Image (cartoon, rainbow, N blue to C red):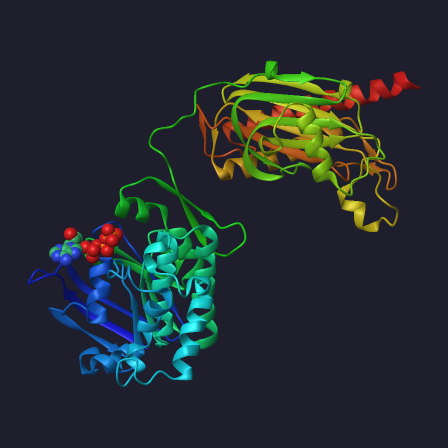
Length: 489
Ligand SMILES: Nc1ncnc2c1ncn2[C@@H]1O[C@H](COP(=O)(O)OP(=O)(O)OP(=O)(O)O)[C@@H](O)[C@H]1O
């Protein structure tokens, strides 16, 4: 559809943009990224014919750009520039109608139904139809931007060049605009080349990305090939971390501030207090937590950890709202809290600290093993599972990689299984050694300060201590469970 071959050019005789080549297929969205002054707008001007090329070729639908008459080209290619002409005294409808210029034989003399429809549709798609008769000077920056996008859409061209289309737009209008562009591309075959500063939006909406650096193409490829930490760091000279989008199969980039507001602190067992209702850790600094907790499971940053005692008949239909109320009652914030539940009273909790070569660790366990099960036999079961829970917290004063977090979970789980084995906890149904319960929960938390741990597998320094600490604490928690059970008889 669009072939750009070794294009060089700029302003006057200086070729700021050099040797740019790429192809965009019909219905494809290509995002153009790059730092300020890297030549994105200049490149777009060169390939749209707004600036003369010093060398190279651009072909649109197989025909060289220079072979098109201006009006013929405008029917094929619409451009949303970065800076717009002064249109203050015009109404929105007039500005959008200018997009129909290539389709007119004499200016406004042959206005047809199809022109009117295109203008109304473009105003509706960009959510500016309610301002149709308002003059541009009375619109906000974001509303004006949407009018210029409407003007480009009204042109009904096969190819759309956009220079920062989401400039000034709030997130709802960013999404509306880009959803619409994507729909036009995927359903009606619109071909799009768009400059973005927001690389996360670009990754979400573009099929491929082109990264510019000092007037040249650094790389062109799918978002996961382009948004690579080291590459972005080199081109933009900023520290970043790239992570998967939580719902879409595309990366998202987060900048790392060079000035941290995080104060230095340590977590100890003194930050844990136990009431009748819960075991609560109130950390002096946010902890990075990976957990299978009931409340705020997954990966996040939290200051409050709760292991809450609930009635064995606790109604789990609306845990989220009920748990949030409980957290507020404790004086904590639900958005800053990870919560687990157990049917055990809080006097079952065993909390141990370990000063080790791997740093300072805290492990807290409640081990309700009355309904323990053997995982290798559960598929033979027909009976309903009864609640009974082993809740395990591992808190590390140290900095863990993602790999270490996941490995710490495995290591802690293996240590728990070993504790059940040593304590000869049995699955009452199969009469074999149990491996856990049906509702066990685990949490790994770290201060992300101090000693660094790349790994926490069983043979790594941290893994050895997590294994030892979880084993010792779980054994003690199981013994306490047995004692308290005995005393209650
Ligand atoms: N009209 C102009 N005349 C002369 N030089 C210009 C002109 N416009 C831009 N330049 C120069 O060309 C280089 C590339 O600018 P360009 O606008 O293409 O960058 P960009 O990647 O789009 O930047 P930004 O992200 O800031 O919009 C810059 O060094 C800039 O100063």
